[in-house]
Image (cartoon, rainbow, N blue to C red):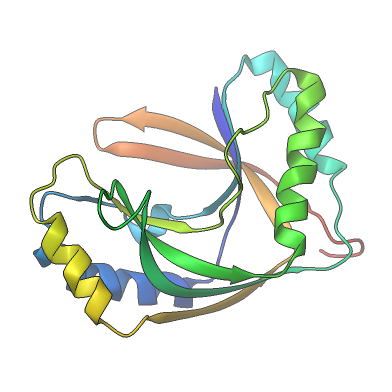
Length: 187
């Protein structure tokens, strides 16, 4: 099983992102644009694990708590690792401080199960596109630099989700295995 833990976000934000992608796609046709219905905010990529680890993973995730919901505001477009050598285009996020703590608590809870901690810093974002070829990327970067940073909307989340990811020729397919309320008393 190939697993990850993520937050969802509202359809209104997905619709705004879908509109942006429709406007940017003609500028860089070589990019692999992510379909908005497949987007999520990854808190932890677990990777491949044997099926017998699923129940211990569920138990570890069920124990993760936060004192408040996660507040997120989706705004702006940027590039990883930078604009000069972009490999990924992303939608930026302004988030409440407890999101980084939530991701760290998930990491800590899964580590005793032999799931290695992420070495890179946690940077919440939505991946918009990946670039395997530089063709058209410069034009896209110049366009993004000139545009007013788009505002995609906000979200307030009280649960995260365990997903299974199946890789197919058409791209990854995600199946939500379970949801976990992380705010005490949240439904």
